[in-house]
Structure formats: C-alpha cells, structure tokens
Length: 291
Image (tube, rainbow, N blue to C red; front, side):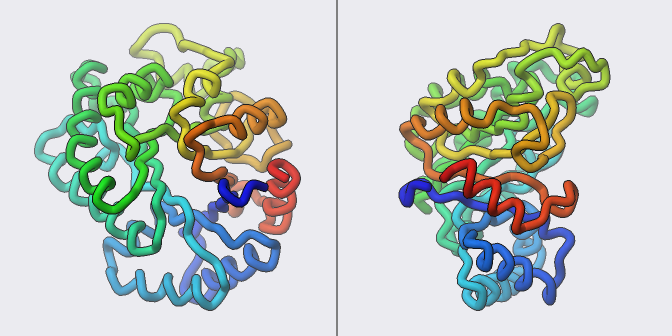
C-alpha cells in the first residue's frame, strides 16, 4: 500500500458507546489499521455535544489511531441540492460546522452528497437542483479553502449524482479544493441492468426515464477523483459488503484507481456491524486488495 495514499477504514459508530468505541479503535489498530474515517455519525455527535470532540481526541491518542478521511452528514435536509429556501441556511451552517470539526482532527478530505431526488422535491427540475448544489458550494468552498480541505462529491444512483452531472460542477468551479469521490458500490448498481424491477437505480429513475447504465463510470470520473469508497454488492442494492461478497471486478477497479492523479486515499466503506464483517476480516481483505 502506497504511503502517500493511505487506506482508511469506516465503522458504524452508531452501535458504540463511550466504553466500546475505544475497544473498536484498538481492534483496528491491533489489525494494522490505524487510519480511520470520521463519520457522519461522529460529526453529528460533536455538533450536538461539542465536548465530545475532546473525548474522541483522547480515544484516538490512547489507541494510536487517527482520522484521515471524513463523510459529511447527509439526508434530504442536509444534502447540497436542498431546494427548500427556509431550510437552506441551517443546512449550510451544519455543513460548515462539519468542515471546522474535521479540520480540528487534522482531516483534509471530506465526502459530501450532492443529494437525491425524493418525492419531496418532485416540483423542482433537475436544473434547479443543480443550481442549488452550485449555490451551496459557493458558500462551502471558501471555508474548505481556508481550512485546507478537499470536498469530494460522490456518484450515487440518482439523476443528480451521475458522473456527467458531477463533472459539470467540477468544471464550473475548477478548484483544487473540489474533487470527486468514486463509490465502487454505487457505480456497480449503475453498471448494468440487473433485471430486478425493485433495484435501487430503477426506483430512483422512475420520474426521469430509462436508467443510464454505464460500465465505465470510473474511467469517466478518474481524472477528478480525490477519494474513493470501496465496498461490494451484487448490482441490485447498496449493501456495503466486504469485497469478494458481491460481483465487482476488483482487480480492474483497483488498477484504475492507482492511476488516479488526484487520489488522496483509499477508503474502506464496508459497514461492519450491518453486514457482519469482522474487523480482522476487513483489515485482511483490504490488505490483500491494496497490497
């Protein structure tokens, strides 16, 4: 694994408390994984209880671990495309706080969802939602620049989050503080028609016509990729499985990612508790995958 491109590990910390969290961090460290992801769950907790940041710093120090990458809070009223004007100021405050919080932990990379297309937004066009994303980044990028942080916007299976839409935003800003997060699991959902009418992409694209399946999403995104989310699935649902438990072609994906000129880190985004993946297995598999 390249020293200049560390591997970072995610954990679903919503299942931990003040006693179990240091244990989980120590388990990662014991298995050779000291670089972790400052998750949306932890960021929300610091926003709610600022003194929690001091506790987290102590946990990291006592276990010899560090946060190296981050994921911003996300959801209908937290994503960048939020079109409801009365809710946008609070959303932007929360996202700016997230940037300040990760900077306090020495993290210089954060992934943000541009947002999806829920029924709540049915009355808004894709162009309007795209404009909301741009307006949000107009406010967030100066903060990121001041703090030395790169914001990465992520491909998902929604009409707002296709590689083409994301690259439009990248070109609009042309900023070293804005990049793309390539999500391997999300790309796999969009790679081919699984034939399942309940598959995530089919449901998400009902209002927008045929799903634009594309087996070369990574090739399209590669020049602007600054971080990546690595997890597996079978092309139907966003399962966040351990690599090898789905049908992603990992040698091809990793080979391409190693050529990404702006890539800062590889992120393991397997969700351990949800998918019953042990920390030992996660660390072993990613060591083999990226070794």
